[in-house]
Image (cartoon, helix red, strand yellow):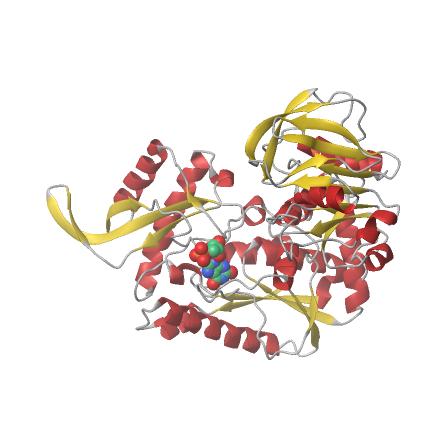
Length: 515
Ligand code: XMP
């Protein structure tokens, strides 16, 4: 196994869902390249990757439970610095001869840690007493021989343990979460001072290395890229264009189900600003045909997905000598597809996705990047903020935000209402605090009164959520004056709407989209 990078790398060993990704992101924020590896890797395989440091992540289990994830103890003999976090710290203690006790009462949430004596992990300015975030049941009660205890909390006598000679460390708290305010400094200290890395990994490096890798993969041949208007496919296309210029053709299947002005913006950005060769398939009429009479959400998704693939094939079929297909796959997709298989709740369709039976070699320049890094690369490549900071948008577009049959008239109504939602959030300066905010058009009618006249029209549902990863979400606590502005503008400006409601359902039990 090799790391996908020529840069000095800190490996994060994944001992449980969710924890490892955030640690890897924090290491990268310290300008050190980081990759996640499964905990089953043997020491020899890890040594082959020549990491500059190893971090053992937290995990949901107890080290005492049968079948709990563990690491090959020989990794402690490699001479590579190791930092164990939470469950990882308990593994360090347990495997090297300390005691992990399960009789305590656990410690959850914010607590206060007191430092003791010299430490490799805290710098001189790090406060003697500092808040840390805990989430553990078992506690290390005795550090192994050769370790000194450099931090304790009321319920974790061994909150920090350090072996200066062997450069092996453990912290019971979570330095990677924002609730541990000095945590990022600790991670930086580990990767910079203990692992001795200069911290020189940056966006310009990412671009240079990707450009070189794309050139060597594609050579003088041709590639195509499906654009959706979303940030991932946009940045992937811009990066590949920088590498191979006119050997790239982008295909934009314009479904007519995008938000107001988005189709034009894709064309403007790629064809005119970036100078990328773009095939623009104006296919709204075909999509409306396919959606005529379709009301069931899954049937709609299927109809849109199938139509999309056929049109993409037709458009890309003209580019007969293309051997490569560019995909905006991100690092979290790569990690997740290797681990868990989530239950299917909705059949997701990615516009710009790969038809199963097409024979292309994939070019995936974002495979090792997190979303925030993709955004930084996009900005550096000159993509506009509207694309770089675009919120996630479902492949089937407004098709799954119009309940009931999708018609051109309903799309126009929804585009207008949705634009108002986004404009008002922008005015309030809230767009970047919110994961997604949009309008949904319901297929019911209610009675109202406007200018002494009775009305009997449809409502708009406003949905705004906060989230880290779309797996769970909470409804956004938007200020009432923002909601009031959205409501009054929609009623006054959008024909056919006489009521605005706000969705206050979290996920679960709701989903983010309505269909
Ligand atoms: P739900 O509605 O399942 O959505 O809570 C989770 C996230 O996924 C987006 N979404 C999709 N994205 N193709 C996509 O690329 C799809 O078919 C699709 N359906 C939902 C949704 O906007 C949210 O961010």
